[in-house]
Length: 77
Image (tube, rainbow, N blue to C red):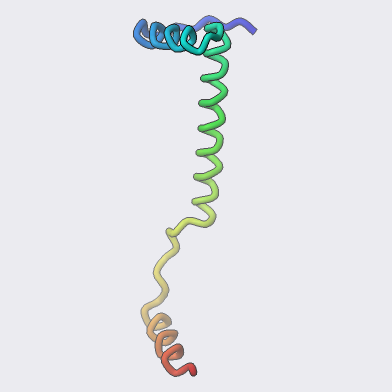
């Protein structure tokens, strides 16, 4: 599929140089860059969702229960 986009000149020139160094057509360079970006952002989204489920943002336990648990553990053999 063909797509027309506008890029700032410095980004275009840097991408053009990189494509030449990699010896790939410019369109392939842009496709690979976009693919890498999409993969990275989807992995970040997965990590954020896992952190929301398993994150360390649980509330502190009740101070009384915390003290009672410590006392119980001290008495345990």
